[in-house]
Amino acid sequence: MLHRSTSVPVWSPLHWLPLRRASLRGPVATLLRYVAIAIVLTAIGCAYLWQVNALSNLHDDTLRLERLTARQEQVNVVLAAQLAQWNSPAYIAKRSAEEGYVFADAHIVQVAESAISSAHIDSGSSH
Image (tube, rainbow, N blue to C red; front, side, top):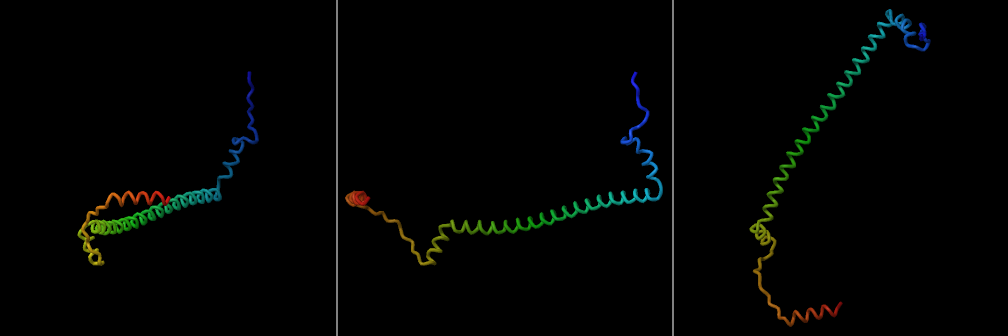
């Protein structure tokens, strides 16, 4: 038959229980409990305030980005109108006339074949 020891080793937590029970009595133990509770509540409160601050910063950033987006949309409308204006042939003709350019009709230029062939020969010999 196996023999079990009835004594508890010195390093066992069961050996420390009677000492712990004796040390956690009295006004000092009560004060330590209140201090521990105050530390835990303070940590929870700090974590809560930190989260509220982070959410407030996110809200401010969101509002700032919404204002920036609205401003950029207004600029896009102006730029789209300018692009449409510059793509208008009537506006380009008007601006050209204001700058002193004249509209010239397209003329068909006929070049003799002998001029083309001599141009090819000249360009080939220069290389």
